[in-house]
Length: 383
Ligand code: GLY
Image 1 (cartoon, helix red, strand yellow):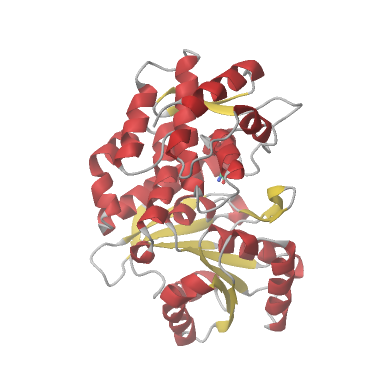
Image 2 (tube, helix red, strand yellow):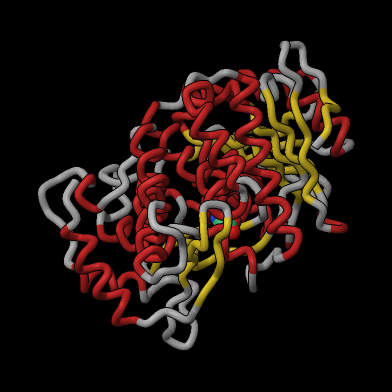
């Protein structure tokens, strides 16, 4: 990472390169980037016109600054405002969006800007992958979750009744602008949810980063630009290095799913509702992966307690008992949901387990009966 961009504010933005040959791109992290998007686009992407895709909530906070910045360089082709929420990632809205983009007369050399969280990034990115057989797109993620995970790595797609993200494409962005100022308008619960993915990078490959988070989490949550930038830069650098080696997820990219096989089952059980946000499910799932690893004797005693202690300190749930509402999942139902995971191969579950904090590994060598028995204990674990 290098300090190459110097915005008007005191904290300089940092640049992380995702080195994917002809599909290489930069992730800029720091304050003031939405307001500078127009000049950055011209400098990096040439003569392109840009169509903005966003949602109603994000538009209220960030659209005027982005549109003004694009208009100032004469590159604003138009804006399409989608309804907010996960339900927007569907065929009907993809169709509506694609036709609206064509109506703006976007050409092959133009770009789509996805301004928003993971839903807008996934939907606009997928539209970019199919529009005129593929045009460039720029991610301007406005949630912490999108900044550290979904905006980087080129996974795009929509949901169907059969499951989440089952229709999609790998389509890398041409530029990512992770503006730390955008996070100041984020509700605290959304910020915590994104933080679960930040902590994930420490747990899966960087023990020193996890220890740094234990020391500095209050500065990160306090929106201190230097600490926030550092946390995001370390996270996206970790993701960039993994994606560079395994763009299409045939090996190490699966490490990014630490906590996700357990967590997705809980998320699906809770109906992908505000009862359990994605990052909250991942926080519980990472603790479950740690408890399961410890139970199997794969990592030292006390590993799970340390992880749980940090996630609890920042206000994240760490056990099934922490999920709001009175009803609890049946362990068999969770097990069935885990078996629908995209990483199941030949009927065998793929789990990401821990040897220690900072040392995760992918395994298919798990006994289904052990997992089922573990889930029985997990749903009974007191708060
Ligand atoms: N969110 C996991 C990945 O991008 O591979």
